[in-house]
Image (cartoon, rainbow, N blue to C red; front, top):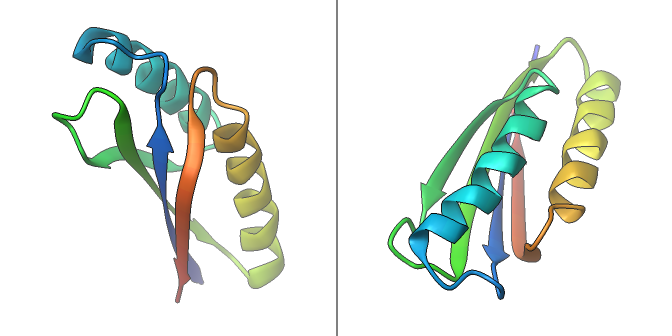
Length: 92
């Protein structure tokens, strides 16, 4: 079994309020959840123009983990109204 945890720090330049930020993050988290991964907002909750989102998942082997990670990265990088500032991935 392979455990993968990834985090992304996002810039939300069009977000003028926490309500607008939550709308962007809700959309992103819903799309990520369709990939059968666990998703949380893991930091920067009070900053309306930045967010940190983390994903965790299990895979049977490294090749499967790589495929899931590519799908997750694609969804995050294509998020509406969000720009990836930084990312970090750990695998055990």
